Amino acid sequence: MGKNNITVREMTYDDIDEVLRIENNSFSDAWSREAFEYSINAEYDYTIVAEYDGEIAGYAMLRSSIDTADITNIAVDEKKRRKGIAYELMKSLLAYGYSTGVTTYALEVRSHNYAAIRLYEKFGFEIVGIRKNYYSNPVENGLLMIRGTI
Ligand SMILES: CC(C)(COP(=O)(O)OP(=O)(O)OC[C@H]1O[C@@H](n2cnc3c(N)ncnc32)[C@H](O)[C@@H]1OP(=O)(O)O)[C@@H](O)C(=O)NCCC(=O)NCCS
Image 1 (spheres, rainbow, N blue to C red):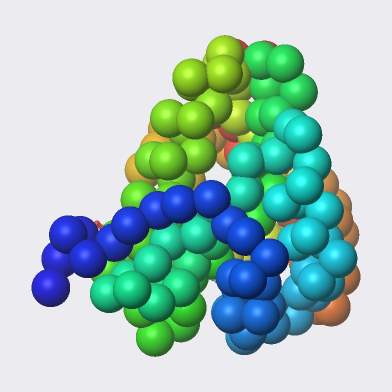
Image 2 (cartoon, rainbow, N blue to C red):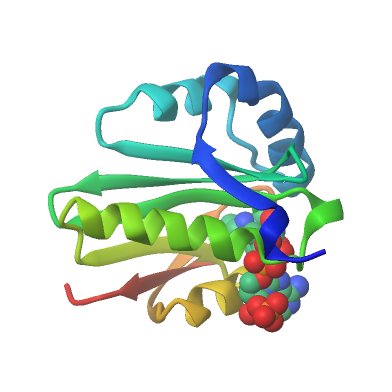
């Protein structure tokens, strides 16, 4: 089964239970329900889920400020990884960003999160800085990655 089973759409409140399950399995410093509710409602946020064979398999969001945007979160159900789901989510975020005039994208990633770093590099992000001890639980450096020009 390939990419044909992946569909991307905007996140709704009804998705949050399933999204939180993936979030809590994916991160030691997980977002709260309120953080997802905020992102769904925020005027400058684009908040999406990916379905794989009709089930929620991942999610991602973009927070824009005029021509610059942050990718604030992305995760895929650990049982459905390496099927191109994050790739489709990233494609949707960037396509939406470009349609609204975003030219520069930024994100932070834990310095040992090789899977995510590879994913971002695939989309042209480059490491431009290190934020020492940016993360807690466990404490870890954050890498600042940028795509586009500052
Ligand atoms: C990072 C993450 C979102 C990738 O999701 P995914 O759906 O498995 O990724 P995809 O299948 O779309 O992979 C796209 C590309 O990313 C890279 N990649 C993804 N997982 C990888 C891994 N385990 N090792 C190396 N590269 C990886 C590869 O370049 C891959 O392309 P390829 O399969 O053609 O080699 C997923 O591992 C995850 O949810 N991790 C936990 C949450 C997290 O760390 N989020 C990022 C926070 S900054």
